Picture 1: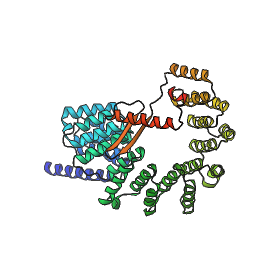
Picture 2: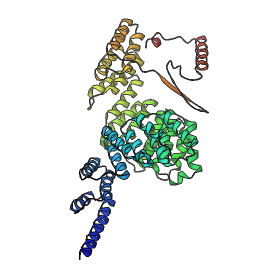
Picture 3: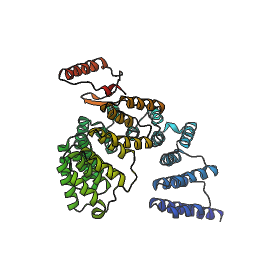
Picture 4: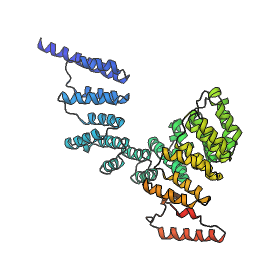
Length: 473
């Protein structure tokens, strides 16, 4: 009789476990939690892990951490699967302090020898903006897998270290790993940000040769197109766009933005019209692209029309980014008074970007009076930004108001504002070379500065005169 009772209990527990996993598979977390709470015995760590991962999958990371704490309160020792689930929850929650505690626990338990746990640690540190810690974990992995490389590459790209992203890709290839679609979608934005066209072409070629274009989704194709557009190769971007079988709003936005960025205003407006005629509804980004195109191409009348039509015709409420584009457009066209009137009558309070754009327009057209108004507003909103002081200093310098320049420099010292050094880069056959203003760290720095001096000398021979303000900051 006792054996029969034990068998029935075991059968019931197995059935509950199967039902619980079924609920979790279909993300029915309320039903799963209700069943979990009714379980007579909760000593199976697999069920606890399933509940933690179930909450992580639907983005309820706080609930996942509650389950983890309850598990510890019940005296169960987390295993490797528990740790990876909890690290995913901590990554989503951005809880680096608790993440470090879990990291210490993994070392104590010896779980840090497992590559899956280490990959989860890289992801956790990356999502918590702890790039150095993520890199230390990665470098200490003895047997790296494709997920290790993808994790650290993605972390560097998310952190904005585009040069580091491409260096890691090179290291990945040297280690014998072949990039997959995850790798590709991480490194293409790096090429776009650095305008590394040769690297981007190589990656595109790799996609085609390895058949990844057959399994890739619209997001991947958009990333390829965005890379070409930001690298200035609109011909190649258009070829990719025309070959796309399925185009979403983002696909059209990338092309409109690309044409507008490079001064092809007519092409940008034509694409915007075709997009609307094709039944796709433009979104906020679409209007940023087309208004920026009007600004760069000088289509002032059309830009005004589009801003006026956004809400009544397309159902898109103008945001600060759209006003900034139109103000930039008016400023470039020399219509400073109209730009100032638009800022004064905006339904949204102008931010520092709007005022700085207006300030730059005042500098371009030598309107010192309105420049002072703009400078006052932008310094109130963002007193620590060096660009505000530089723009205003250039305006004062052009007007010969050197006492005001000196006062600005004094204000910068008082506010402890320092000008960020200028940065540029060039793509050569052996990689991307990054240079900062006054940088002496490049191994070929003597040759670089000799070349720069020769170039400056040639410019002087042809009448170039060093601006007095170029040495001020």
